[in-house]
Length: 389
Ligand SMILES: [Zn+2]
Image (tube, rainbow, N blue to C red; front, side):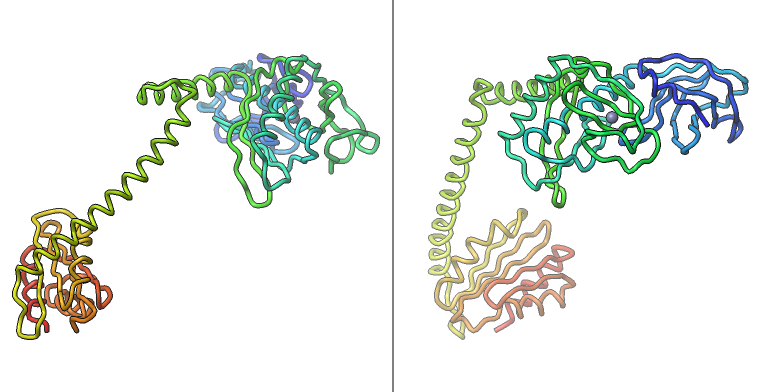
């Protein structure tokens, strides 16, 4: 059984301990006592050094705690030093989560159903499907007020059968470790926490996601909040500079530009359609009808995409007894369109032509397209379509 020194003192960063067992050639070590926190309760494990080795992982095996090291150790007594900035950061996120969960329940009656402390952001799931921006702002403000009140955070040990006023009933029996925030919260928890809420630092709620029937709130505390605010500010400043606007004008400006862009695109489409209709009419008038009364309009381009040919194809197919054959040489592709009264089936024609030339594609009787393996194959397909009546 490993004595967990972090239970009694989460500020202990250095300790000596006797080695009780070594495994994996000395790379996995069990101590009689440890200040290293193992991954549990959503909180990531500590890192640091044990003797001359770096601690890569700390695993809670129930009764005992395993320290996974980068190199073997052979000493019978070791000095451990935990990476304090990492641990303190976890203590801030963890205590901040207790405050946030308590505030969300007190303000809105929402229960926290799960928590996760991540490398960059932490998350907290509450049992409601939606959270409004106004609720986020209220909860964030209340949580930070409690931070500024610097309320004591204390640990006590109470019998599970007699412990009262817990925010969430514990399924454990026997002695519970209860973490209390003065006049706010009592929760059974085995994690590491700061000694007063002021040490949490600023609490910042990020984006909200819907996860099944719950809402997932991202949040950061302490220096992470400062880092996030700095990154957000810099991003907004860059955006404002590129738009030659003040940061507080960016959102309205982007919305206005977006509307203008949509208007411009729809005007462009209308002009393209109009231009295609004029070109189609001009080309149509310039060709002779064949024996069956069909007029063929051919458009061949060295490069580009079939999308650029589509307006002309559709405009041609809206004229009487017309067939449009459009080709792009590189990458080789073919587009065929036919007017309803032409008696010409574009889909059938292109399928036959592509089979002969080794291409792929298809479509409807009115509009069909395909791709071909080479320019030579494209020429064969065009010739083949020219032969279809
Ligand atoms: Zn906790």
